[in-house]
Length: 487
Image 1: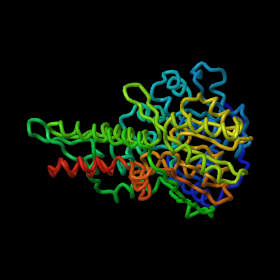
Image 2: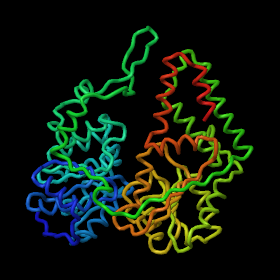
Image 3: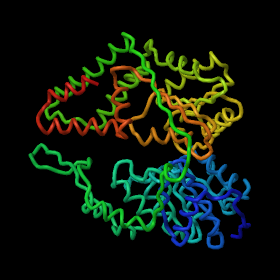
Image 4: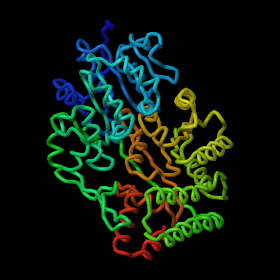
């Protein structure tokens, strides 16, 4: 296939030039560049330098940012929309013009179950393809279908790259699949099990017959210096603080008390969990049960509870606190509001629409189709004031959010990495104002634990479960119950 030559239209920043210089001689490489430092622009430069050796770039990314990536191609290159293809639900191996596009953007999640997408990608990838996995922690699970399929299909491609600002969200265990995608020779292991035997130590659980076996939880890691040394020649890593002079971040928080109905439901939820725990013979508690408890408690403080498919709502002060917080912001400022639950999105949207009008509020969540989300985003960019979204749908790759400097976290997720992703959608290249982040929380609730763990860059669920495991091993069942009731 013959492609027309294209060029870049924007200059590289100094650190981006350093990354290009390091990775240009390599066929595989990793850009571990913190969010907002320009991973996409750097990768485009590498593609430009390899034009004479490749016939296309296949760019895997989270589904929610496919259109954003396409806009980056238009922004930074002389390529036109006719030179690119963004996979849709209807795209397949027979799509007209499929083989004529230089830039091909594919949702990573589609590789989990879409035979249509897999077949089309298989048709496109050759030895002259450059394959990019953007937000490569999406392929950190070595057993997942999408990881195995993307790795297998990309194996014949001449150039392979991974991009992420957070290569390890759960420790060195995350590295194997990402490095294996690039090349098994980097770490020197042909299988995950060999990798695990050399670097991972799992916690053990006692079986009913008295024997012990490894659990899925990792107790400790070993020989990490070896891993770092093996990866170093193939990776370029940089933090925002090392290369960008961005405006500062300003944090504040606003608190409120639960209503009597909320507090009653909140205490009942903890008591149900404690009773179930006490009634277990081996009183081992799964991660699923802990996640369900935390989610139930957090939904109650957000004003609702779903049990057995039925949703109960409570009178609560969270949305009223949001309205008060918004009222104190200069009317000329754009505001991004991150919520966790769809129920909250609906409540927030209804409240802000009543006060500021329908045109002022746009929403961005997983219930909307890709095209509808894109329309809502553009409506906010063009004339809206409030963008109300979930971190799951909008926490990655929405570069347009840089036009806002006010962000409200209506309800946080449990992982620090997710919080940082959401913050840095506004705190990145192009931001000219100090970024103001406000957290809403209910006193003496699960919100306190979440906030405390985020402030120490921790993972709320993991830290809680680690402590529970210690108490269980020590036979301190009553202490576990106290720990749960103190939430």
